[in-house]
Image (cartoon, rainbow, N blue to C red; front, side, top):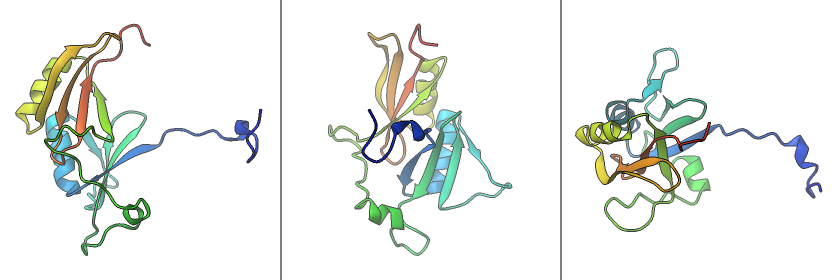
Length: 153
């Protein structure tokens, strides 16, 4: 059965990136390098203060500033109806979780917390076959530190 807008077989989407709106791109890059062991993907050795991409495998984790250098909201922030800041300490569920995989989740959790991440839930074994712990980054965004699900290739 085809779509009313044409056959679905002509669409071949692939997941490009997750864009996270942050207060300060440089500080977020430095934090993710220090706390989570990621490295910035640099373009010709330059750092951009409004945009950065982190090496995370097939899918890119990108940071962009909520406001531009002149203090105005970026156009796509306005198109999205604004950005709601993360809830630092509240019980309100987050609308996004960044999940990073590690072979040793316990070590990754300890390292992240020792380097400025806010510990939310220490690693524990989940019934579906993974180990996961949770921290918040410097912008209050929830980050899951997880192992691959056992038995999944």
